[in-house]
Length: 233
Image (cartoon, rainbow, N blue to C red; front, side, top):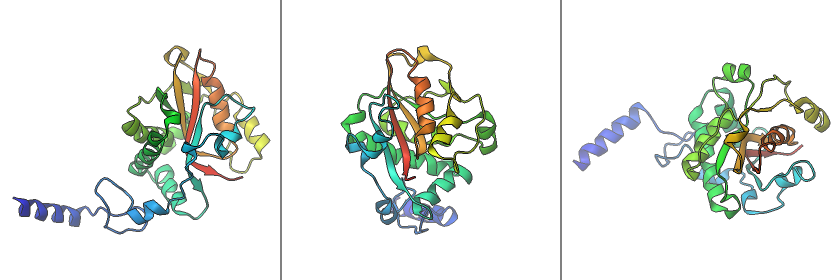
C-alpha cells in the first residue's frame, strides 16, 4: 500500500509539478509555495515584535494606531516584488493567500496583536476590483485568518470614489488624493472591537490613514495595521 501511494504521488507530481514560485525547484514542502532557500531569503522586517517600529512612526500625530507592522522590506527587481506582481496582476490568488499565511504566522508570534478581534481588508473601488477580479487585501486577510482564526469583515468600509494612482505623487498629494475617499457603512458591526486593517504595501501611509479615520468613527474602536511590505520613499 505504501508503495502504491508513493507511485501515485510521483505520477501526480509529474502531471502537476509542485515547484517554488521564485526559483522553480521542486524541493519544497507540500504546504509551501516557496522552498526553504527562497523563504529564508525574503527581507523580513520583524516589525511585529517591536513597538515604535518604522511603520508605527509613520502614523505618529496623524491617527491613533495601537500597533502596526509590515512583514517585508520592498525593493524593486526583488523576489518580493515578483511575488506581489504574481498575486496583484497575474491572477495568482494562491500566492496572495500564502503570503497572508506568512503574515499570520509572524503576527501570531507577537503578543502585541493578541487582542485583535477581526480583520478588515483595505477596500478597492468597485471598478478596479472588477477589472482585477478580486481585492488583493482580501487574499492577504484570508491567509492571515486561517492562522489567527479571526473573521474577515468585508464591506464595513467602502471606497465609493475612484482615485488616481498614488505612484508618482508626493506625500502631500497622496494625502489630498485619498482624503474623504472611504466611507464607513456599518459602524455597529465593529463597535468596541480591536480591528486589524490589512493592505499589501505601506509607503507614506496616506491610504491607510484615510481608511483608518473612517474605521475610528465607530464607537470604542481600536485600530491596528498590517501590510505585506514596507516601501521606503
